Image 1 (tube, rainbow, N blue to C red):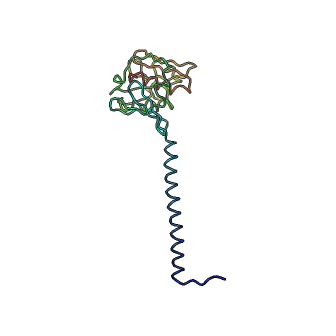
Image 2 (cartoon, one colour):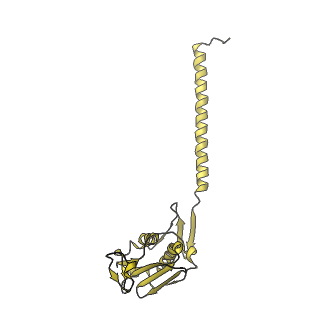
Length: 191
């Protein structure tokens, strides 16, 4: 048999139960917040490297971001990743400034060039290299020679980056082309 409670006792018991439940909820919320901040901080390890005085930071989009002369750049690789790639190019980034940049090739490599040189060049346009077969050229693409700034990206079994007049030839296996383009970018930036 249950004891008969007065209204005051019943209200007192309900208030006590509500207080206990409220305190438990507050404890759970505080512990979950502390746990989230502790674990998310350990997951957010910011990877940084310093190369020739320039700080490279790997962002959540897996691009290395760095600042040079008040410009922000984003590359897939950092200079340490590309150190073993020989770049025989004598141009600097200033030689592209305010001039059209033409290219032969495309894909992911082209996005890397646009992302990093787009702010410097007047425009970027696909062209056909004079003397190349018309089968490898896009329809209606203008024909240019090496008196213009042209970057030619070709698939090859080896990696080689060299310059002939104003043409830069980037030859690499398909899976290494972005790395080769980043090596070229680092070279013209003086890194």
